Length: 137
Image (cartoon, rainbow, N blue to C red; front, top):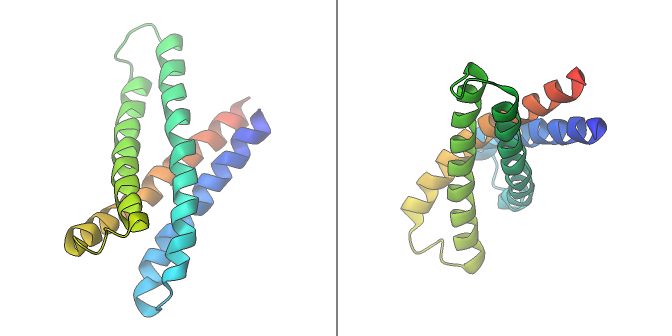
């Protein structure tokens, strides 16, 4: 289980770094196929990160006596941010897959910018947390 956590942590960090780097250099290249691949990697990362963050919240709540501890307060915004990015990502991705993304292109484009800026933060934070947890055991 420790090796799996470390592997998932490295995966989340790598996907976050890939999305951040490609988002910055994307204006210089015309290669939309990279985003098609990145969407699948991002979807897998978000589906992996959400349950892990929820599990961490439950673990923190069980281990701590006072309900409003510092560690619990640190984890909750991460869940909210991850859930928000996941909702925005999957909405836009499903619009794109169904072919309706072009109908509202300005809104869709702005949401993609928000997702591509916040996703590396979410994935990197979740990945670092997993790597730290696996190193402590």
